[in-house]
Length: 336
Ligand code: ZN
Ligand code: ZN
Image (cartoon, rainbow, N blue to C red; front, side, top):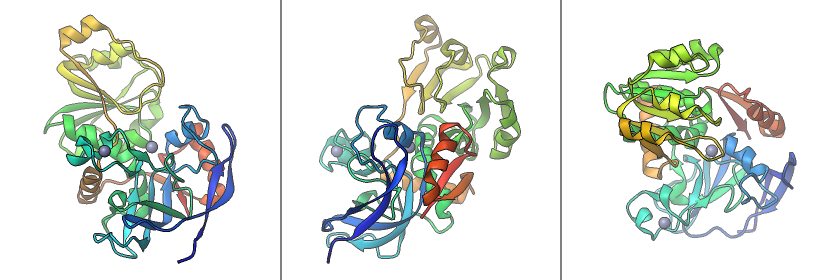
């Protein structure tokens, strides 16, 4: 088998646009698969990585960690996937396979995790090569454009909701964007009473359409006060710094505040308020492949659908602009 040339879009330097670029793939490893990418979602993290905001980006940098496509080539040791099968790849393209987290099926916590677009080239490309364990089958009931954003945005909210919600739990979803609109749908389907919390009054009707029972405009202190002491769980998908004390006040005792998007800077918490409420401040990091599979089944079963705007790969820079300016409703998906 000769080496294949893969066409992609890459940033050549921090702050630069994405440009057409290609690279040659080497020989396929025995545990690897090559996927012909058909769809790839655009995540805010792609923008941060393009700009080297975390200081860990190498260039040329090919973003994309919400890829769906079709298995093209299969390594000699791979028995659970077949050629032509539809699969998705999220934040991880592989992990160490040996640590206690990998051994217990919590690969998302592996310290030697190989992020899809950092330990190789990402999904803004015609082809993507990953460890076959991280190529996750997509059920027939989920379209590829709908499934792609679930691989990062979806699992990021599904995992903590699954961890913290019980039937009848009252949950607040902070921020109604790519993550939040999926969080509302998942929480509703899990049997929770869902309050969507946003600074944007315009999103009230859509929040209801996604399944929220209530909408609270967080810029109105009176509306926030009405929530006082009521919520079991708050999931913060927003990227702005919040008035933490005002948000914690919406929790009932023993409540959990979980950040999944979160501000880039440090969070300063009111300690006495935390203690008297016996609150838990938590964070969540994507989810392992087994949970992504479960999320896909759950989404198929409950007719959960990502609201997507599809755009061809060669218009990727306009898609990035929409994400940068928060104009995506609600997730941009590139089509190859
Ligand atoms: Zn992401
Ligand atoms: Zn590991």
